[in-house]
Length: 296
Image 1 (cartoon, rainbow, N blue to C red):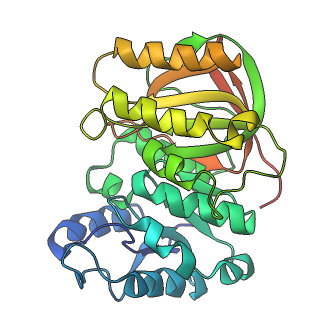
Image 2: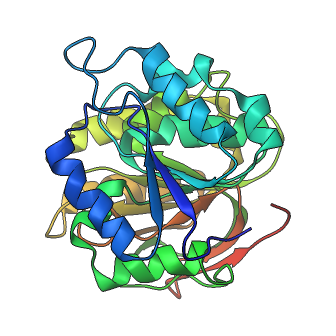
Image 3: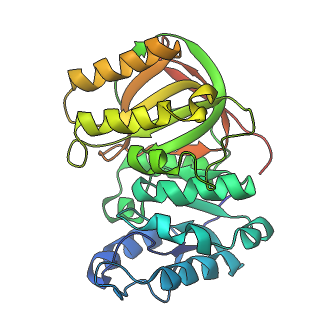
């Protein structure tokens, strides 16, 4: 499965109120890369004032799933994605597999789709990425969706190993608060026994180190902790934050798993893509990650 130039990308907004003014530049950016764009019928609605209703947002989402001409469902962050989880037609996704790409609040939906269907979903970019598309970010998009799936992670920042080691597992994760909220729910696969490489990201604008630590603690207090083979943390701040590094070091030491930090993905200028559900090998000492794909 891959995108071809001329294919249609469906834009929906599960987590924020989109505006026609802002999305004009986004749509133009995607079309400039050679793709057609379809927008959800309720994309610009604000029924609740802060969001369209969950039924309106879910209707857009499910219509894109059912539309055979749409090869990718693309959506951004905000707040509210959790509300859609009971309304998503997971059986339709199984019948009509396609790419699902998002980040931030999209974490909840991406992990739910993977958990309910087994389909690989993709974390790391939002439609807004295309409003001012940077070369590294387009290279990431092209590598995962247009070309053959990449075998290795391509760095665009300095990696910091906070606990050396090598691990193998299924990639799963996203934005820390959304992932923590999903733990122990019916929308996150946690009982299949497979080891996981957990990837997380956050940003100082949204979460203090105390908040990040709280989210990590919630994950640690879940049975899911027994499945974590390693942790890769993404961009948090423009300069190194010693408190974050110390918290991540403590995590690695406590569970004796490899831990690394990088600025390659997250709420920064670099927006690398991580395939949720793909297997990978993380080597924090060598600062590398290799992908191992199978199936869809």
